[in-house]
Amino acid sequence: MAALEKGITRNGTGYGGKTWNILGQVYFPKAVTDSTFAFETNSEPGQFVPVHVHPTQDEFILVQEGVLDLKLDGVWVQAKAGDLVRMPRGIPHGYFNKSDKPARALFWVSPMQKLEALFDRLHNLTDPEEVVRISAQHEVDFLPPEANE
Image (cartoon, rainbow, N blue to C red; front, side, top):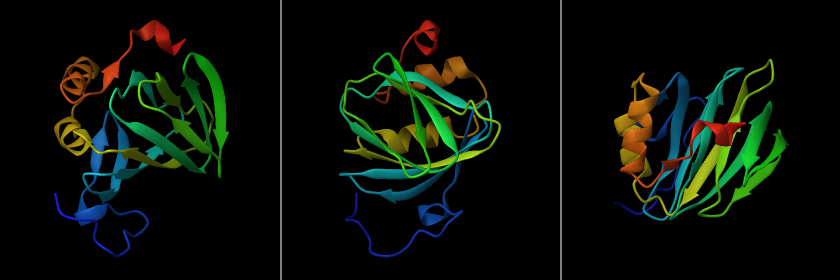
């Protein structure tokens, strides 16, 4: 992987022109290097990513617009625009847009590990079970559905 390039990834665009659609949510990569992976999510009301674990990565979420409900290490918390969520490696977490308005957030993960390759594989998949299976091959482990309650 190349070193981080200087420059700007414009609003509404992805680094290198790339965009992913993962189970209906739109993701824009913002910066991609071995040491970090930053991406923007756009979550419509009712959209979510179930509780999962990154065993080898720390993850952060900066909520930019709207509200996200998070299940963080078994506890429900809420993050609003301007809030930063810190999720150390190994901590189960999931995020949910339970509001009636869209939410937008900047995520970054360190180190990148296999996440860009994972997002490339998940792009345009429609089967949640296949998403879970492929994710496990890329160091993202989803918990059973009851973890989302």
